[in-house]
Image (cartoon, rainbow, N blue to C red; front, top):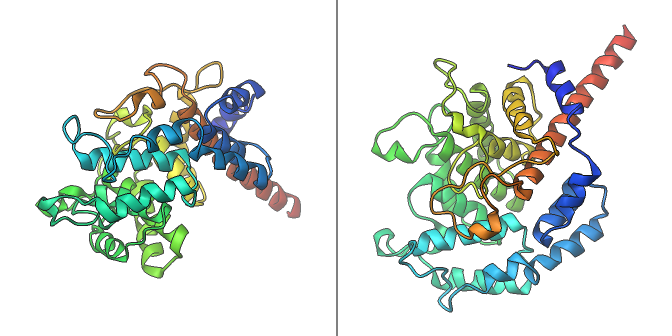
Length: 336
């Protein structure tokens, strides 16, 4: 495992913040451009908001919105089930960062709220009330929070399903007592989105803190019992992630949750640094089965703006902490 000093040196010498990479990221769809402006530059809040407003009317945003059916659903229900097309199109719109208060977004969400259910098998539960699996309900909770469709019942259900080790597992209803990284990251993203939109509660904050420890105690990729890497594929990056876990997704969640990085994230950070190409960009390593809208996600093995954006902002989050630790250490040494 890389030491903090060696990892810091590798990061500083990697040329991650080159103008060429930023220019490449900015030369893109508004959905990527506004997030680059927000996360990687010193652009004013007003300019970021103006760029974000374009997502609903230019590029990929309207491309997805235009595919919604009059009944509020996406897809044909044959190529993929309606629930899959509905959920992951909405996840994609959230990833794009479409303004949830825009007229086009509100019209689409109103159709979903008023018409779309999970079908007879789940007693026609309304879309934003979820179904039974925590991995799915975590995604639905995040979507509801993002688009202003609150479900306290869904929060209570997820909090009640947290396992003793701190995480969640869709197999718990079939007897599993060990958490799943895949399910846990989905639920964490949902709880965080709900907390950020509607406010923190002690139960929410405590549940997320326990789940953070579940991930961090395992260095984001190792078995707690043996220390072995659980799945080497978790150091390869996909967009969109769908329900799959990888270390970049976990790190980006921790960044969004304002968790202070410590030595337990260093191996995962090293994996991100190692995936960087010589030109300062990251590739789309894998595409998960049944990924929708592949043309928006990019080609496998090609430099990928989504992966590069997320990697750069994760490394910036980590670097900010390293700089703070170094500054504090120097201040303590000076006082001595």
